[in-house]
Amino acid sequence: MYMWHSERCSMKRKSLVSVLVALFLVTGGIGSASAQSDTETLITLSADGIGVDGEGATAANGVVTISAAGSYRLSGALPDGQIVVDTTDAGLVSLILDGVEISSAGSAPISVQNAESAVVVLPQGTQNVITTTAPYAEGAAAILSASSLAIDGGGSLVVTATANDGIASAGALAFSGAPIITVNAGDDAVQVGTVLTVTGGEFNLTAGGGSGSGSSLSEELSGKGVKAEEQIVLAGASITIDAADDGVRSEKDLVMNSGALTISAVGKAVHASYNMEINDGEITVLTSDEGLEAGFITINDGTIRITATDDGINISEPDDIPNPSLYLLRINGGYTVVDAAGDGIDSNGSVEMNDGVVIVNGPTETGNGALDYDGTFTISGGLLVAVGSAGMPAAPGQTSSQPSLLVNFDAALDAGTLVHIQSSDGDDVLTFAPTKTFQSLAFSSPELVQGESYVIYSDGEVNGTARDGLYTDGTYTPGVEQSSFTVSSITTQIGNVRGPRGGRTRG
Image (cartoon, rainbow, N blue to C red; front, side, top):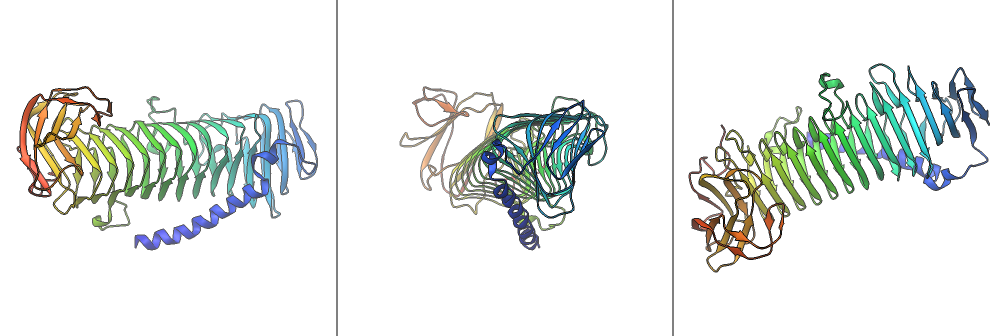
C-alpha cells in the first residue's frame, strides 16, 4: 500500500521538479540576471509614480500588473503597493529584483495570480526587502504564488509578514543559486503546496515569533519554519530556523542530501509523515519537543545533534499505514548524538542499525528510556552508546549479529561519571562520560566479541580527548569496579534488568 503511494507521488514530484529545473535553464542562473538585457521591461518603483519602460506591464494606483510572459527588472521603492502577475499566455515570467523595497498594508506585495511558471531572480550584490503588515488571512503571504515558483540568484531578500506566511506557493517552490534569504513571519516562514527543493543559499527563518515568543496562537497559526504538502528536498543550503511550532514539516516525504540545518522549535524539529532520508549534511536541533519524527527514517550519513524535551528520534504511525511492523528506523552510517528528556530513540515499529555512531543521553525519570521500541532492534555494525534511567531499560535484541550489553547499575551515577569497559587483556572497549545522571547503559560495538570476558568500571580518570563524552584515545586509570561479564549471547544483561527480551518495558 505504501509503496504504491510512494511510486505514484515520485512520478508527480519528478515532473514538478523538471519544470523548475527548466525555469533555471531558461533564466540562465544568477549570471544572466546581473546584467540588463535589451529584451527586459524596466519597472522603476517610487511613491511619486511608477515608471514602465517596455512591453507586458502597466501601472496604476500603486499596483504594477504584468500581463505577459517575459523578463521584468524592478528597482526602487514602493511604500504601499503591489506587483501582480496575471498572464494568460504560455511561458515564463521572470521578476528580476534589482534592489527593491516593496511594502503593502493590505495584500501580498508580490502576488503571482496566474502564470504558466514564474521565477524571482536576485542578482548578485542586490538587497531586496518585501514587507506586508496585512492582518491574518488564510493562505496570505508577503510573496504569494498560485503557480510553481522558483527563487534564484546570489543577492539578498528580506521578507517580513507580521501576521501571515512569508513565502507561499500553491504549487512547487525551488530555491537555487546562492541567495541570502531572511524571513520573519507571523505564521509559516515558507509554505508550499506540493514540493519544496532547496539546492543552495543561506536562510534565516523565523516563524510565529520564534521559539521564545510564548505565542498563544492555535496550532494552525503558531508558525512553522518550512512546510510542504508533498516533499522537501534539501541540498547544499545553510538553513537556520526559529519556529513557534515545527521547524521543518513535510506531510509526506523529506530528503536531506547535504547542507546544514539548525533548528530551534517549540514543536517537532524535523517531521515527515511518511519517509525521511538523511544522506549527508549537518542537522543541529538546539531546542524541540521531538527532534526527528517520521514513519520511516533512514540515516545513511551526516552529523545529527538533537536536543529534545520529549523523544529525540521518534518513529511515528502514519494514519493510513496500519501495520506497525512497517515502521522503521534504519541507521546505515553517520554520527548521531541525542539528548532527550523523553525516550532517546522511540520506535513504534522496529530499529535496524548497520553502521555509524549513535550516542544517546536519555531521560533521568523512570517513565521513559534511552531506547524504546515496539518491534525488534537488530544491530549488525557500528557503535551504540545509550544511557538513561533504569525504569525502562532496552538494548538491541537477540536477532542481532553484533553483540550488545545492557547494564542496570545498583544506584544512579552522577552526570560526568566515567563508564569504562575493558577486555580481560586490558584493551579499552569504551570510555564514556554521560552528560546527565544515569543508571542504565546500552552498548554495542564490534569490540564486543563472543566468548571474551570484560570488566566494567565507573569513575577513574582519563587523559584523552572526548567528543560528545566519548573518548577514543588516551589512557584510563581505573576507578570502581562495577561488574565483570563474559559475552555468552548476543545480548548480555547485567544488574536488575526488567523486561522479557532484554529490551523495552512499558511503564
